[in-house]
Length: 525
Image (cartoon, rainbow, N blue to C red; front, side):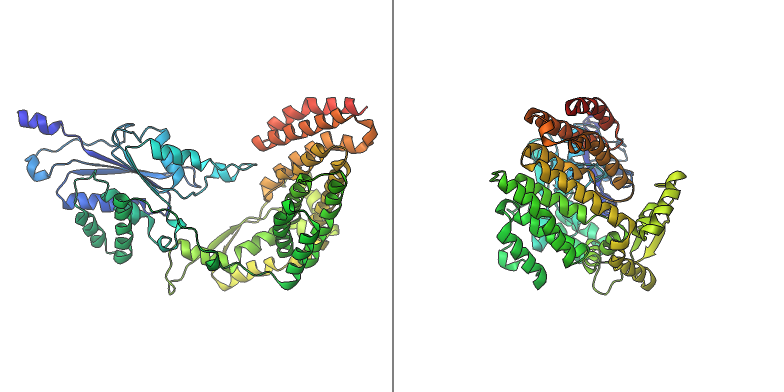
């Protein structure tokens, strides 16, 4: 009877695995269960599916009783179906934010948990859809991951060339096997990989690397020597334009301007890139005459102007989707062998306003007006599923990507260029008398980004701030305002911009603008 009580008091070894779709969390769990069964250990596993579109990982929970069936003499331990906070021995996360979720929920404890986590990032929907930079602070998670568990094995396979091709779930499996928490010998884990019969050699190689990480520690990341970097060379004409900019513009802005020239030239052509440079010149000259030395307005304008001039449209999206380096990246992500075909399907859903934007003005404007009157903008789409590894799908995408010649005669192009010119004139006008105000006006295009619904929301916020706060300033003369009024206007524009970025629905911006617009009109009078 006493032996029964003693045996029943033994606690199972608990393993919690959080893995994103396609990262092999289910396979890892199968290997672990198979290794436990081969060792004659009672084992139980359960999985909880995650939500699609990267709002949560699929979790797998495994309990292994550390006594063999034969030693239990026919008795069977009762194993739990779900993990309990503070009672997890090994926590495995295939991505950094999933490690953060586990720590937040209490599954990582300093008394017993070994945390094994890959520290690369796969951004969540809420991070990518934020109006501003919505990325979570990775350093906060890393600090917690180093301090909270009893032991931490943290690594990033993408940091070193020799580890980028290793299979992630096999590395995690190896680190778990060498954690010292599981009552299974290393060869038992290796045998489970062999019995699966799939990519055995590659999985064993990655497994051994995981064992090394857990036993010898994670090596320091060595930066690649500069000589090994394969940077694309600029065309001669573009390089001449870059050299010309370097002779004229300040050092604080030149790197941004170089990127802007590359972006605008790639978006349209070299003539368009030269126009980018010509548009920046009056801003720089105004700031230079005002006695500036750090040139913040020039630098910020250079950044926002490049992004605005190279706005997202159907041609741009098709160009990005049909590039050779994108297909190479997809093949690398799925670890396809040279002889293996990879099938890709693009989900393309242009709206009626996006199609009208590329049409000549005399066609596009009536179509867009018709759609707006019937409230079809944002509702009427043409959903397409294109198999871009096939001739028809790729040819269609490739052809659309080369229709840049349509842009200059298109409806949206003319409207965007007029709006850009008005924005630049406002910056130039206030750079001398109110540099803080000019800088805030230069930052306003942060609201304009993406395409389709994202672009419409951002553009609506930009126009609301412009019409209520900037336009009243432009309607008057500089002598109509005191310096304090202009500084106050800069603060109001900044507050409105932050409100718009914090709330894509626009409620926060409406609350901010309601009193601000009235007080600014009084100041102007």
